[in-house]
Image (cartoon, rainbow, N blue to C red; front, side, top):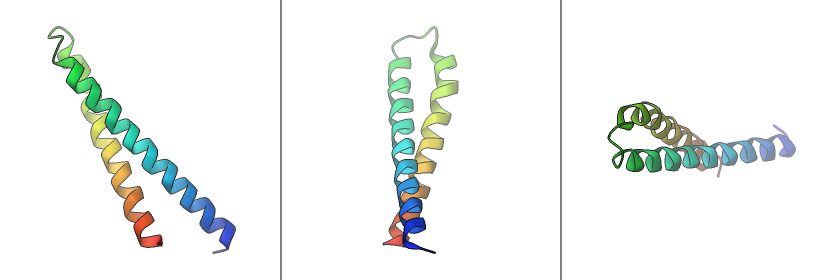
Length: 70
């Protein structure tokens, strides 16, 4: 793999890690906010919990790959 391709893969993995971290943060905030409004709590949790799980999974995957590259 050329140096340019390695750099591109590293940048894409870093962006994936950042996106996963932001998804987890957004989902976590939505979960905390949903406890204040009992009317919409179930509907918000249906969207927030997958955001947290997918975001954490993306972050874990990208950081694992980045650590192996170093």
